[in-house]
Image (cartoon, rainbow, N blue to C red; front, top):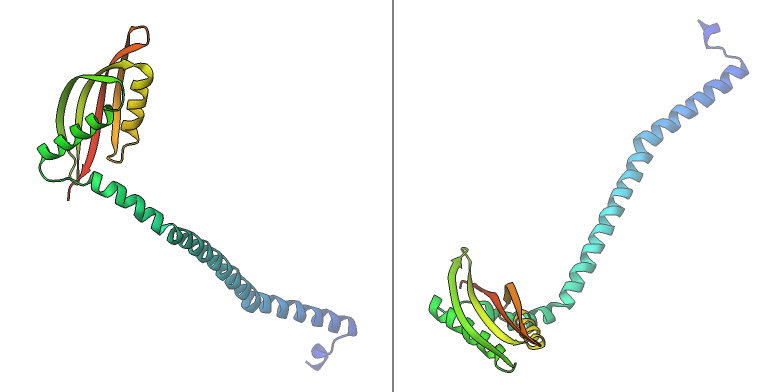
Length: 177
């Protein structure tokens, strides 16, 4: 039995190297790798949190501008009461937008109100006549209105020269209070 424990110097070196490799593998597997993995995961979390913080800080800097824009659209989008009052406001705004332009509104036909739960869509069919540039300016003023008016359908026909006659379907969305 004692002869079994006696090793040659070569065997002692091989055993020492083997023990060192096993010790290093255990150290790496049990201590180093979990520590490095945790540091890496925490570093990624810190990067994600930092990016979120920068985005939120940017949004916070824009808060005043967003609030000002919201105030402009809030009063125009909220319903004022009954459907008749809202439709009258819609028609009044459409007429006010057409006044400064040399176009003529020939016919106005209201469309049924569509109720979508928390908002309503009001629609109107307009027949307009005028020069093409004025009609384009009128369309632009409808689309850029603070009342969120949208032109859904356009059909224009040349009447002669620079004069065009067309049909427009315009809608407005109102949020129910």
